[in-house]
Length: 239
Image 1 (cartoon, rainbow, N blue to C red):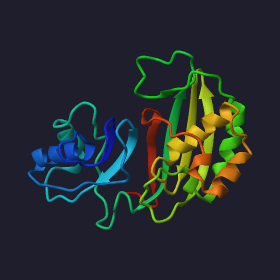
Image 2: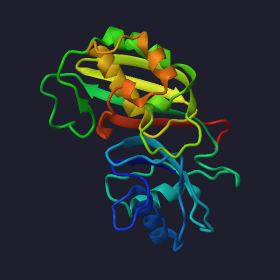
Image 3: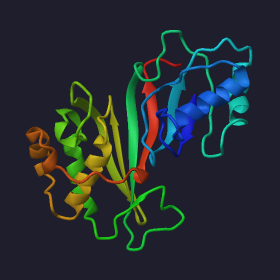
Image 4: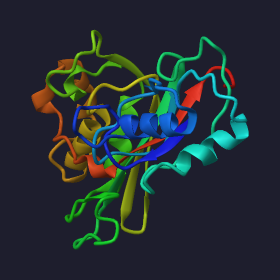
């Protein structure tokens, strides 16, 4: 299942969340209490074009009708794009091979009222060419310890970035990273580091030094969640 998310994914007692809301909608449709397995947990304020979640059901509802039925029980801020039958062994997170995240920066002096919750406004000049040069250093397998939030539970901070690109359209700067996995806040910290490159506080070639140091204090600030999007989740085989 795929959902466009505007609030945090993880189910929490007495708090509005994507997981619990969709599980309740499924219960209303099927009469079954299910547990959704997501491809990843998105924080409050983060958006997702392609969150993927799986669950088991004994329902006789035709698969092509599932998304429509569940959407009738959901708030407008959550949409199921489609539903598919999958192999019994499929797991949205464990079967995932690649994810792509996008971070959107509005680089205008005043920002925008309409898109204020869909991007992050950086109101001062950023050298985009320097940022483009810097982002290339993230490609490859690295220990991203310097780019993870404190308290991250992951046993290993080694990740592989397959593709990293930065481009601009009018007043907006887009940062896109494709990797085999991401540490907590990793994309937002990388984006914050690239902003400091654009401000001239960090030189592009210093990215390698920061990665190798494993020192969180040498990287940039963690940018707000509002500019972050889960763009795609890729699996080795068709679901």
